[in-house]
Length: 307
Ligand code: PPE
Image (cartoon, rainbow, N blue to C red):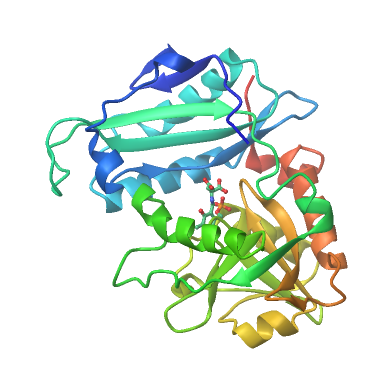
């Protein structure tokens, strides 16, 4: 699905027309994956558009930037305000928000430190990440032949552009072999995450999700789901999950900003539970979708209203 263009992009402190937000072909990050980014969603609510967990996402962007020695020349507050203003200028009710900080044009070679840091934010309407029917009907996943990189290769909790080649390999392999999405294991052989999603399993009404040491990006949706599940009085544990536990689970689902909450009905041709979206998954999905749209006051703190 091609990108739905909007009117303005924020770039290095200015609101530019969409078509003018351009970079040179020798931009450092294009060659070496040296940038950092975020994925955030804004939802329509009765009080106008609201950005979900904006501060948490911007905080993680600065965490990623610090790990990559990228000094973002704006405060977190300035970027938050730029996002809110950009949504307003583009007149959007609901959108995906993509801030990126990258190394621009200057020198070539692997030392990025002399290249200028550039920052851009784009917003556009982006529908269901795993397909329109994925939330209701669920998806089929395969265990990837690509492992998630261990911490002595790359830090999984840093959302850097170059990291996503690992995700792209896993994603394309899954699609080419007839599945909707991949599930990657860590180098120890325990379940890690999807190319752009965290994974949960449900067994005997308890939720399990891989811990930080399983080479995951510690998702903000994952954190929201843990809180929602606890409030619904389900047990939640962060612990290592084997492939066997995955196949044997009552329910399995993906979480992520773009994905939201998507049931996984089949893995490697094996049905999960009865092969239909699980009851607990759907309950949690519905609570999540209410929370992001401001329909559950318990989670009001997670919303930043555009107006
Ligand atoms: N793991 C990975 C590798 C990942 O990229 C994401 C988000 C998550 C887990 C879930 O994190 P969170 O969004 O904080 O719950 N992936 C983003 C980018 C996807 C893309 O294709 O681009 C997203 O969901 O916005």
